[in-house]
Image 1 (cartoon, rainbow, N blue to C red):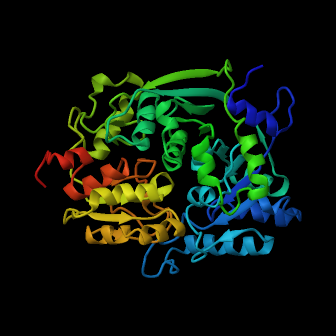
Image 2: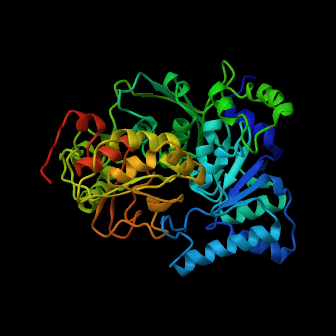
Length: 474
């Protein structure tokens, strides 16, 4: 029987399957950070259990840490400091590979995993973090788990999981010149909604996917969770293999060619079926931006905020809440809304390609006087490469702050917060109420759109910046 790639990976990792019960699923590798691992280690100690396979584990600090370029070792939040110190103790006690400050590899788990070649095609991978789907860009079945499941993997490399339904999302058409992977995934979420893929693992297909860089594929897979999917992945190809070759944890030369042979089988067979298939039309797609309080509330930047009459009845109450919170009027153009903050970074858009894109827009320009802009690389490796390429100078000359690696302003779990009442345009993945700080307002967009908006001081695309379109006097 022909199989899709999702079923191929799942079947290969089932240890035991019993009707009416979840499968026992083998997990190849797990990433850990300071927020969701402490209780799992405590349980191992209570039960006097050893780690099953230390080589399957990798840890770093990212969520709670400061990204201050002055002294990020100082942590003023007691809870955050305790989380970091607890992880440091746990990885030392259990002898787990750990990348701390100045290791040259510290960074966001979903940036350093691929960077180090820890993420490989055909694997199952988990992390106590919902955006683990990022690693699907490599043909990896990767998803977030809870703290108790983190403990299960530490002790057994297995978890209990019901087989997910499978979905094929095919992107049809050629997007506009200024549209990016971020805009493409936002278009999917806006089309099917935040629950449109609930219970499914998605395979993404289409010519636009095949032509994407591995960094762009990671951006796309990263936000699979925002339409409710358990995970999202892309079949590995030569772009994948070229990226992984020579990485620290990738197969070495004598095993490399054998690995390639195995990875080349990781594709959906002709005639294989999915539980659901959809086509998303992206022909001439323009840059997307969110206007509301979840990632579904997104439109092309040249469009206007929908009116209640354009919204299904079941969603109208939430949309009214969004109007009130984001201070948008029904029918108001999204472009031209004044912003006070701009953020480039996160596990969605904190890679070197993202920083290059932002720098391209910012070069020989300056952000608006009233805007504060943070550019936060996703890892120490990304930061070093940005400096080597002179991107740091472009950011600083443009008036932005170029900071140390971490999750930063993606979530209000560290020192980097958007002040109450301030409006931020961000390359991160969620625009929930207060996500970037109590009372803050978040608009999701691509690195180019964030950089252009910072220059204009209002929501603006790169194309609008080039054409000197200004919707409102600041």
